[in-house]
Length: 114
Image (cartoon, rainbow, N blue to C red):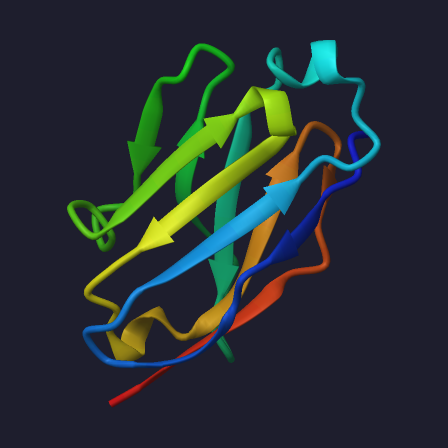
């Protein structure tokens, strides 16, 4: 397992932006670059869904609902994965979770007011 900690959530108005961060705080620096990482989210009353993922090689995939608005990236030197979110919509309101090999973070709340 690769424990991670998310940050960067908050309350934002529709059309605004946020950047989430996920740090693999116990990972050995040389190992992190080999991990596939992902962001998921779970809205109230809904199942957890994949938002975006980034492979060890940097290949990215996105849910259709966020394409063109969200960008996932990674900084291996900082053992961190980011989720840049722009043009946020009330439908993006959810707890956002970082997924690393074998485990999940505790999540960070994103609330978009209309």
